[in-house]
Image (cartoon, rainbow, N blue to C red):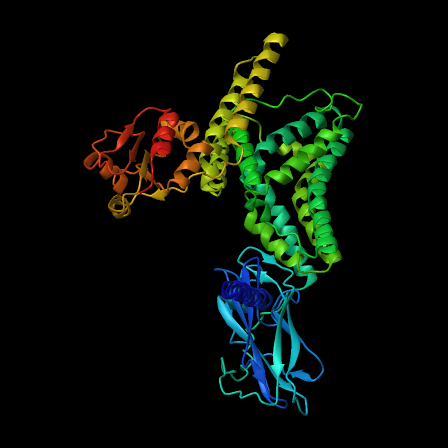
Length: 596
C-alpha cells in the first residue's frame, strides 16, 4: 500500500514539475522574440500591481553588430523609425513611451547624420491601473507591437516582429516593494542636425538613376560589352534601322531584369508581408557559388580561351529579326553580371525603395534599370557615335585580358564568402571547370571536323557535370563528434581508462580526405564510437606550429599524415594505421572492447 502511494506521489510530482517547466518556457516564449538580427524581450516592473498605482514595462532590444533602428520620425527616411505600441484593456492607461538617448549615425544613402538606436537599449512603457478595487486578483493581458526598419550600412529590413505578450496581476494586496527596475525620466528631444531630413521622391529617383548609370562601369559587365559593341557596329554598316531596334532590344533586356526585381518586391510585400532585401541572395551559398563560377568562365573568355560565335541573324545579316531574343537575353545577362560588383550601390538605392509604398518602390527599381540602359539607348539612337568608337588593336586585347584578372579577383572574393565546408570544394570545381572551358575552346579550331568538334565538347561537358556531382553537393554533417587536439584532454581520458581515437590530418592532405570518406563516413563505425564512449580527437596538422603538428613528431614519432591512433585500455601503446582503408580493423577493435 505504501509503495503504491509513493508511486502515485512520484507521478504527481513529475506532472507538477513538467507543468511548471512548461509554464516557464511558455512565458519565456511569449515574453521574448528573436527576429532576424534583433532580439526583443519584455519585463514587468512589478509582478503584482495595486489598483490606482503606477507601474511600467521594460522592452529590451539587442541588435547584432552594425545594425540599428532609426530613432526619430523627423529624420528617418520613409517613416522607418522605431515605434513601440502597447495594447491593453481600457482600465490600463499607458503614458508616452520613454526612449533612451539616441546616438548620431552618418547615413551613406542621404549623406546626413541621423539619430539611431543600436547595440542594446531599453524602451520603457509607463502605465497606470484605473480600477477602484481588486479584492480578487485579476490577470490582465498586455501585448506590445513593434514597428520600424532595422538597418545596416548597406541595407534595411522591415521584419514582421509580431507581438510580445505578457500578463500583469492586479490585486489590492500587492506589496509593490520589490521593483525590478527604475523608470528613467523622459529624454529631452535631441537637436536635429541641420539638413538631416528625409530626402524627397525626386532626390531618391535621381539617386536610383545614378546607381543604374554607374552599373555600366562595373568590371563584371565589361565581358559582354565587346560583344554588344561589335554587334552594333556590324549592324550599323549593313542595316541602320535594324541596328537601332536590336540596340533597344538589348536595353529592354536590362529593364526586364529590374522589372523582375520589382515584381518580386510586390509579391513579397503583398503575399508575405516582407520586402525584397538586396543582398539576401548572397547569403545563399548556391547563388554565390554560381556567380563566382560564372565570373571564372567570363575571365577565361577575356583571356581568349573561347569566344562567342554570332550567327548571321545575330550579326544583322538576316532580315528575319530572329536576333531580337538574343539581344534581350544579352541585356538581361549584363544586368545580372552587374550585381557582384555593385552591392553597395544597389543596396543604397533599395534601402530607400523598400521602405516606400508599392508604386514609388516599383518606380525607383525601374529607374535603376533605365539608368543602366540609357547609354546604350543613346548609342543606337545616334549611329554616328558608333564611328567614334576607337578601332580595335593590341591595346584592346591587353585591356580585355587585364579585365579577366579583375574578374578572377571578384570571383575569389565571392568564393571566400562561402561557408568553410563548401569553399574548398568550389575552388576545386572552379579549376575543373576552367579545364573544361579550355578544352571546349582550345581543342577545336575553325576547320575541325564537326564530328570531332562535337565529341570533344560533349566530353568537356561530361567532365564538368561529373565534377559538379562530386564537388558541388552540400557536404554531409560529420557522423563523429570530433574534438580539437588537446594534450590535457587526452591525458585525462587515459587516466580514466577511456578509449581514445586520434585522427591526424591536414587541409592539404588528399589521402586524409580519402580516409574520411572510406573509414570515418561509415555509420557503423560512428555508432560504435558513440556506444563505446570513445574520445574522438581530430589532430589538424595543416600549420607547422600547431600543437597537433608538434605532437605528431615529438610525442607520437610519426613522419607525416595520414595516420590514425587508437588507444584501447588498459594498453598504453596505441594501435597505428597508416593505410587508407582500415575500417573493418577499427570496427573489430571497438566491438571487442568492454567498458570497465
